[in-house]
Image (cartoon, rainbow, N blue to C red; front, side):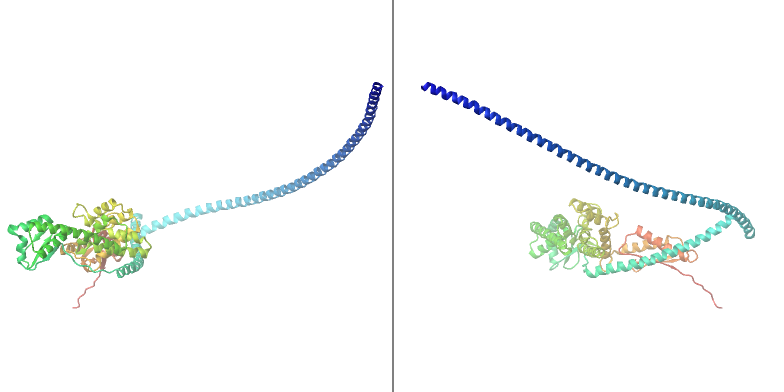
Length: 512
């Protein structure tokens, strides 16, 4: 019974399952059919919408194409109008050119006819001139060459006169302006810097307390004076001068050392070779210190710094050197100050001008030790201690041996001349003074037409008398210029020399 119940249950379950499957299948088929119908409807709607969109886009494209075509046609019309206008302008220009060409042709024809007429007239003029020339030759009894010479001579005189007048006017104007400017600069510089000079000689005189000291200086059999002269390298001159002896030496530093040594010996009173040697060494050290101090004071006075210590020593040695009685160190300081003032006035480098002026005579500190001119020795020293090329040019050009390459070198030249030429600055030997005057007069007398010449005002002016029948008034100006140029090229002199040419015509008659 149980088995049948189980079987019945199983059969019932199977039947239920089959019925459920059939029902579910039927429902699914209905749903699938509904979905397919919905999908078909969606596809149909999409197709319709796509067709509508396609039609809309085609319409828009047609509108855009129509718009572009309209714009292009408009642009083409405008371009055609511009081309038509350009063609009209070109045609107008061509017509104008043709008109101008016709006018030019007519003008050329007129010019040709005028040229032919001019040529005929020129031929007639040449014929008339030839006839007139022949007539003039017949009347004046002169050939053509002789007439040409007369005309050229007359023209030469006129040109000489015009040249002299132009030179005279130009020189007067230039001299007036240049003299005013130079006078102001030089006067201002000298007024701003004025220093007194102490005249010094090449010997040193040492005073003695009494004449008995001369014998002690000489020593037994002259041993003291021999030891002194050998050690110092200075000549000790003992003569009849009361209570004084003279020290003579070319080297000013040695002479100063010997002077200090002798003064110390006189004060000490113990004069013998050993003591002379001790005091000589002490005096040498004192002079070395003094040399350095003099150089430093000179640099400080000028306002320059950074100068090589060896150059400072050379500057200090210049304190014991003189030139025509002028202290070389004081002269160098004055040149530096004047050059700096001139540089300030003209807008040049003040420090460079001062440095060049201070070192321009540095070679004089060593020209007694090494042979050669002081300019060359100064240049060598400046190069050895790495001075600037401009400073070296100031040194080598201050006497005109080399052309200046900067304005500061020219200012140093001017300052050197001012310092050396101003009154009281230098003493000059009578022989060289007379020789300079004779040279001036000989240069003037060497020119044709000069009757006599006189160097006056201590050689500052050269007055020349010319022969009036040989030198005309116009030629006087040229003669003065030639003489001054020759003086500048052949002579060396401080300052400037005035060349004054005098032409005088006298009429003398006697009443009887």
